Amino acid sequence: MALAFGRLTGTVGVCIATSGPGVTNLVTGLATATSEGSAVLAIGGEVPLNDCVLTIGYDTIEPLRLIHEIRNVITHNTHVALDVGSHYIWTNRYCVADHARQFMVSNGQQTLGVAMPWAIAMSMLHPNDRVLSISGDGGFLFSVMELETAVREGVKFVHIIWNSNSYDMVAFQEQAAYGEESGVKLGGYDVVKLAESFGCKGYNITSASELAQVLAQAFGSDVPVIINVPVDYSRNHRLMQDVIQSYVN
Image 1 (tube, rainbow, N blue to C red):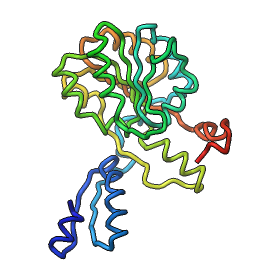
Image 2: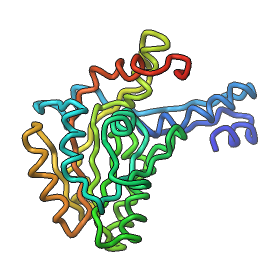
Image 3: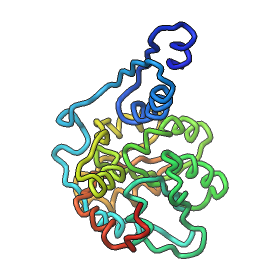
């Protein structure tokens, strides 16, 4: 819109976006403006990392420990929806499915935010089964508004946020390709208050020992449950090493 406004008026178009997904979604439009020689002023918000409220004072949890706890609650009648991010690489590799089509994943299509809408649909189709969806903290923000839809429609599911305060899959691929990362940090948000504001239930995990009990409680809830887990992605570089290198783009 800013690009079109600037071209129609002969002035500089101005657009404003929030930090995280908001700023990221400006990239395509700014690329178009650059290619067309149009002037656009983009203003984005930023949150200092030391203002984040999610992981300070919490123990970060190894991905394989988290997958172990997730696998323990997946029954034959559990349907799993995976968003896009580092979490879905770990989950696809190490969380075994009981049967075909138990896991839904877009597998390389970069469809950030798809897991929770899928979970809503799964709950509608299978109201008596367990439904689990998983995303990162960035992907979660792409469809968080659908919590209102979930509550209004009376569906229930458990959604786990693998929280790294970043777009981590982009970060570790940038490190692998360029030796540094850029534009991937995210500020924090209070998952419990956010969930409750929609009429859902929210949990903050502060140590791995809490996972089993919280997951058991979550699957007994009559409303959607959002579980925030601070995750340790320090070994993500192994995800790039332990593959056929010609397949890495």
